[in-house]
Amino acid sequence: MAIPDYQSLMLPVLKLASDGKEHKFSSAVEGLADEFGLNTDVSTTLTP
Image 1 (cartoon, helix red, strand yellow):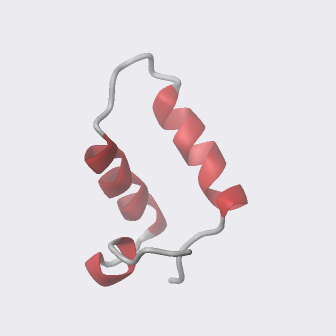
Image 2: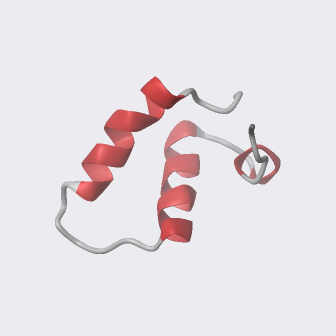
């Protein structure tokens, strides 16, 4: 799967943030990558 666009990422990010707990950035990225089925190569790719 390709890297999701901003619109596709927002709802999962907001759901993650809504639990009221603190989340490390790295664990959030891993959780979102799992949710979207991204492999390691895609999830570590930087976009402009």
